[in-house]
Image (cartoon, rainbow, N blue to C red; front, side):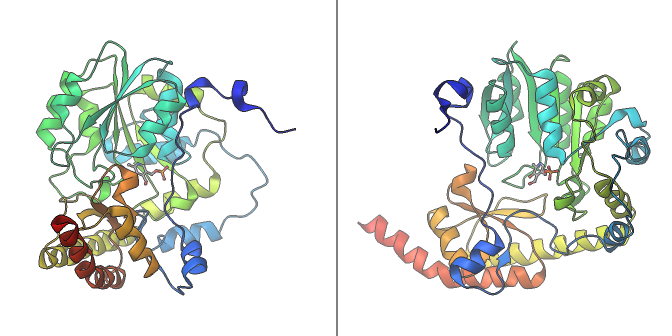
Length: 376
Ligand SMILES: Cc1ncc(COP(=O)(O)O)c(C=O)c1O
């Protein structure tokens, strides 16, 4: 007997669209017979994991015990650079879990949640799961339209997300504009600043903790998945006032962070050399890609992250598919609400060159097809 979901499934999930992860390396190998695909689709660290973190992982003995639940030593360590105590820090199974906890703690069915469009797909997904109303505010020239977002806040609004730098565009908001916005938001609304790519920002970028200091109803999210090269360890952390972290802490699962992740993160954060090397690689890659895009006549948003949203003269999903068949995995803007663009992770110089080589080879074909369509 098949399960009957007609009654079983929550009504708010009937129109639910599942999250689409990018195509995996194994799938490309299998489907197209390509020996070593270039993966520039998930904004991971192309230099891999900090060697110090790998050493820490290798030194772990038994994993038989539940070990620690609150990791106060790690929260203290993460708070220290900002002079924040452990009780202003919350840990999660990836920063994605912390987004979910904000919903669990604060959002009732029918509440409003405000975020940009396009922005990180998870905000929409979690809003749907919570049976809340997604109030999506279009970006202005690829950047958060903070005035429009403020205007979209209603008495029912509980959460406002600002993704800085924004995924999928890579753009960041201006510092003073963010401060002004934060100060004008009501104090019974939680501002969630997702800063998964904070470490890649230059000096012009805003440290979310500066916003938190001015506006206590703020949750600043960070992750070990990007610059620290620990996406598979699943570790995220957040800064907020103790009144907020206490509620996130109460609704989380027990032992939500693993000892393996905690030890790897501690080592990775002490690996200044690896972080510096990752930033240098990103800056060099950015220069390499922007120079090529300019030479090829392709426009791209200015990025503050480790990926670039570039325009292509083709339907994004066709461009994505053509690159895939040539062994380069990127993300199509069609699935990211960014039609006409590809999202490309900045890789090593060799990976960037491989991507540019295939892109350049495909451009004449795409341009000819576009021209023919216009003439038709
Ligand atoms: C905006 C944003 N937030 C968070 C994350 C990372 O989440 P996690 O820390 O759960 O790996 C990503 C990764 O793609 C992201 O783009």
